Image (cartoon, rainbow, N blue to C red):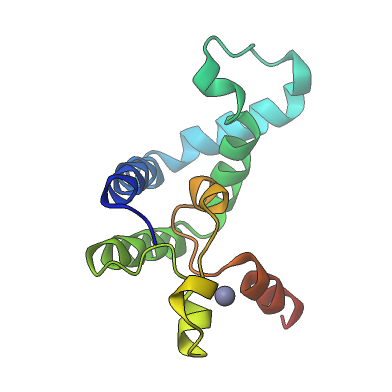
Length: 130
Ligand SMILES: [Zn+2]
């Protein structure tokens, strides 16, 4: 289970994401495409925080444009899970009645996708069944 301090961190992360998702779509689309075309020649990161997030930002931006409302809904659901202290627990595992200790979504995954609803295993099964 996540500590309250960790829940607070993810809450901030989700609030940041929500603000970005609600932002200007056209600008972000152009920005993502620009980075694609320029590749390694794109402007070099100026501080450490940008180094690890470059690829993630781009993927997130592109996905976001595809289904912005879906992401917003997922972010709202994540806020609800933070409030009822089920954040970080796979919803598919919960439905199957697995104990919470065995259905934890890894923190590394939550940092990438803070609104993730499924653990890695369940996500893989979902993708296979599509
Ligand atoms: Zn699961």
